[in-house]
Each structure stands twice: as C-alpha cells, then as structure tokens.
Length: 231
Image 1: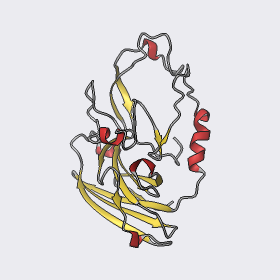
Image 2: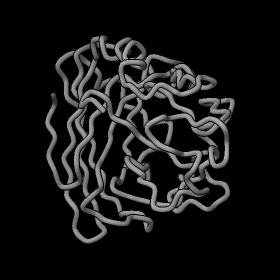
Image 3: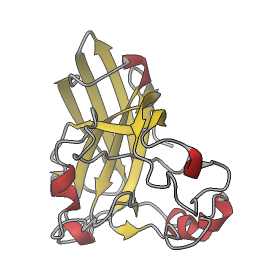
C-alpha cells in the first residue's frame, strides 16, 4: 500500500472460528450502517464501495487496475490533520490524539481510535480449492488446501477505544488553526499476539447526518510507542 493509504482489516465472526473476529463487526456491516453484504468486501473512507472486479476471471492483481478508484479519494484537500503519540507499559496503553483543523466547520465530527496488529497468521478459508478458475494467477489457489494453513493476516483490527461510529468532537473546538487533543488510558485486549507489531489508527468522520453518509475526512497511523506528528 501507498503510505497515503491506511488499511484496516475487520475480521467477522463465523465458521471456522477466527481468533481476531471483531466484536462489533456485525453491527458495522448491518444494512442500516455500512451495509456490507458479502465477505470479503471493501470500503474507501468507510462509506464508498471498493470495486473488487468480482466476476472478472482472473481478478486483476496489478495495483494500476485500482488506481483510478484510489486517486479519486486521495486527490482531495483535507479539512483537518491528526497526530498520534502513545506509550506501553505492560498491558497498559496511553494514547494522545491531536486533531488540527484547517476549517471553521465540520458538522458531526467524530473521532475513532483503533488498535491494529500486523504479522499474524492463521488458517484461511479457500473457496477456490478444486475449482476450475482462480482469482489471482500469481497464486495457485485452486490446488491449495481449504483452509490454507498459516496464511498471513495483516493490519487486523483488535479493538476500538472509542465508539465504533466515533466519539463527538465538541463543536466549540472546531476552528481554523485550532488543535483539539484527547488522551486515552486503556488496556490491551487479550487477543494481542506480539505487542511489538501493534499500531494505533485514528481518524475523523464528518459532514454527514447518518452513519452511512459520514465519510472519513483524514486518518493517521503510528506504531505503538512512537510519536507521529501532523504530516
């Protein structure tokens, strides 16, 4: 991924059991919220559907096939920026998130703060086993088992330290040039595998009056224990 794209993988409950199934995955995917009907499915900025070229055989695996979709979201001015600082002591995590505004108005501005883990692996369901067509010509999924053992799992969502639809940012703190700050003193969840692979993702939603029309306006990511300033 480009350093301008911050991915989050939300694992859903079901069979076989997934040790990182996110506790509110079904609530996020509900038709009244983000209306995620299938798995896997992607969203840009939470509300815009990713065209994954389903039904195309083989699926395009060249990043250029998706470039036009991504560029339409990247080539926009952001009305705010974010900075993240955190420290870890045992299982106690301290986080500071700053939001700097370049505007006087962001209706329904809401902050979301996630904990992610990289470098994981687990059995992966493989629906292509024994089929006549495979999605990605670079990987022989047809002849791989179901499930695929030790399949890499990256940027996995473990926990949200805010409401999953965001905590309101006080409107009286939203003004051009102002920086709003919030501190979190929280604990790591039990399903952390390696604390050295943890990161914080913080983003601000806004400008919509409903969950399903309120996009991400900007996002920031930082390793746990690192200080990521505004950029």
